[in-house]
Length: 240
Image 1 (tube, helix red, strand yellow):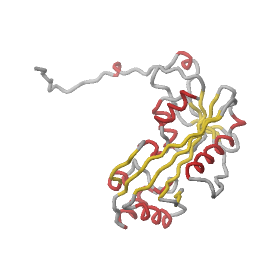
Image 2 (spheres, rainbow, N blue to C red):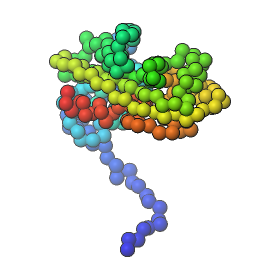
Image 3 (cartoon, rainbow, N blue to C red):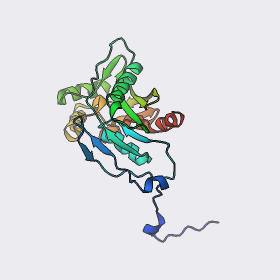
Image 4 (cartoon, one colour):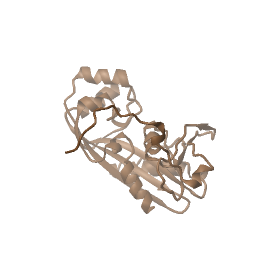
């Protein structure tokens, strides 16, 4: 029989240790946010929390704070460079082709700014309800229209990822089905007014209030709905 102590567990700070690979100790990794006019701004420290040796430095071509946070928490060494990109596309493309194409355009927009040893990671996410594609809402009315359309229905979240280095390019798409329960008008208005989802494809974020009360289940990668399919990304990086 195993006895379980009822005494409160006290943790010493010395129990936890962040292990930084030797090659990275000399040069601490700080993501750098570079705007279109090439003025770098410090974004915050991003230390790998494992002893994994990465073969290259990565460049995240995205302004999304959610993607930045996911890469930081995954321990990937990266810096940030973004450039305004034309996101128009050929209407004859399929939804999978659209996200892949836009992700590639974002990567190519910053290609001239990377070093020989760096690999760009760019992404684009769309929400699809049948043949209808929802991007970011223009205003409150548009956000309400989008969420009302998603309410009580199943939609698909697709993220296109482009990996681009000086030697090669690889794009892939991850898809997740999201099952929304029925939402009242009051719930939709509450969410829009309190969470301002105007920078999010589909006008919602699964990790926010609406995800907790409105989403019944998903089929696929949760983090893909957040904005970056981290598990798939790491698999593709190993092969790149």
